[in-house]
Image (tube, rainbow, N blue to C red; front, side, top):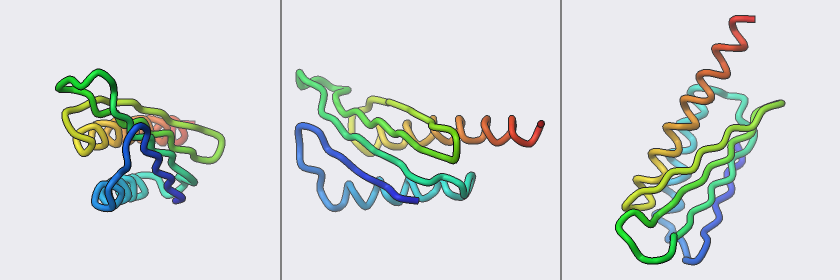
Length: 99
C-alpha cells in the first residue's frame, strides 16, 4: 500500500509519520487490495481542545473510502479515522461476498 502523509499548517514529526504508517498498515490485514491511502493532518483554527483533525482517503480497486475525525491529539484523530475506514472496508467486503 502506498501511503502519502500531508500535514497542513504544521510540520509533522518523524514519530507522528511513523505512527500513521503503522496504523495504516494494520488496514492491510482486513483488505489486502488497498492500493493507496492519503492521510491529511490538520490543525483547526482557533486553538481549542479538539483541534487536531485526520482525514484519510483509502483507495481499493473500483472504490474509495473516506473518513475525517477530530481529536485532542493527532494520534487520537488517526485512531478514530482508521477505525472508521476499517468499518467501511469490512462492510464493502461483506457486500462483495454476498453477491
